[in-house]
Image 1 (cartoon, one colour):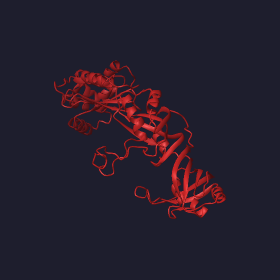
Image 2 (cartoon, rainbow, N blue to C red):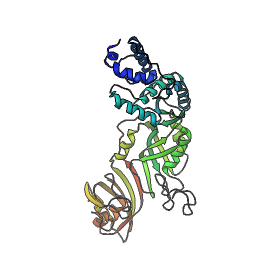
Image 3 (cartoon, rainbow, N blue to C red):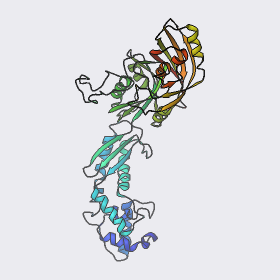
Image 4 (cartoon, helix red, strand yellow):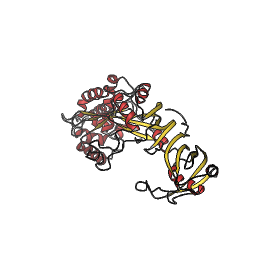
Length: 411
C-alpha cells in the first residue's frame, strides 16, 4: 500500500463509502501520489481499501460530479470543432460547471480539510484538452492563448474567447473634414436620429473606419478599435511620415491577414493614407498611448492688423527653447480637467509673410495646444505668439508635419 494512502486511510474510506466516482475520489488526493491521473488514483485507493477488507464501490451516479467525466469525449469534440473553425497558433480549453457542483466540492474539502485536493475545473480542463489535442493540431498555450474554448458542461455548449489582433502603423490625414476615430452623434449617442440622419455618428467616416472596416472584413472580426499616439483636430492635416497608431480587431477568425493587401486597399481613398503596417502585441497599445513625442507643426496665421516682417521673424526667434504655461483651452474644457500644463516650444521659423498673414513652422512638446499658443486664448496660454508680436493672431489652418517617435522594436 502506498504510504500516502496509509496516512489518509480514514478519510479515504469515508469518501469512498460516500459513493464518489474514481475521478472524484482520486481528485480529493490530487496532489499526492505523483505520475497518475485522478481516476487511476481513485482506483488505487479502492484497491487499497479492499486489501483492508473495506468494499466501497462507486455509485452509478456520482453524488459530486454527476458523472460529468462520461462526457469528456463529447466535450473535446465540441471544443475541437469550434477551435478548428478559427485561425490561431495555439489554444487553451476552459470549463464552466454547475454552481451546485462547485459548492458541493467546496463543502467536501472544508469538511475533511482536504488541502491536497485538486479542483474539478482543473481536472476537466486537463482531461478535455488531452482528448482534444490530436483533433486540433496546434499546441496548448497557458500564458497567452490566442483562442480559449470555454466548455459549459451543463449544456455541452462551447463558446470561444479569441484574443484580439493588433496592427501598428502610421497614418496620414489629408482631409480637414474627418476625425481620427468614430465620433458618435452627440444627440443620440450612436443610436441614430434626425440630427445624424440615422447614422449614429457626427461624420460619415474617420481615419479609424477607412482602415478598420477593411481589416474587419479580411479577418472576419467582430469590431475594431483605434489607439492613436495622440490625435490632431478634425480640421488639421497629419502629414509627413504620419501619426503612429494601433488598430485592434476583436474576435478575428483569421489572424494572419495580408498587411500589404490591407495597406493597398486602405490607401485607395483621398482622405487618409496608411504605411508601415505590422503586427504587434497588446502591450504596444499602452506604449503608444503613453509615449510623449515632440511634434513639428506648420500653421497659417491671420493677424487682426498689419504686421511687420522683421517683427514676425523676431517673435519667432524669441521662442527658442521657451517654456510656456497653458491652462486647459476653452474649446476643450468641457471634456478635459481644468489644469495649467507646462510645455516647451523648441523652435519657430516664420515665412510667407504678408501684410496680415504668415506661416509658422514650429516644434513643441507633446500635448502643446498650438492654436492657443498662437492666439493666447484670452490669457490662458502664456507667453503666446500674439503677445510677443503685439498683434492678435489666429491660426487658420494647422498641419502636423512630424511626430518624432522611434519605436523601440517591432512585434
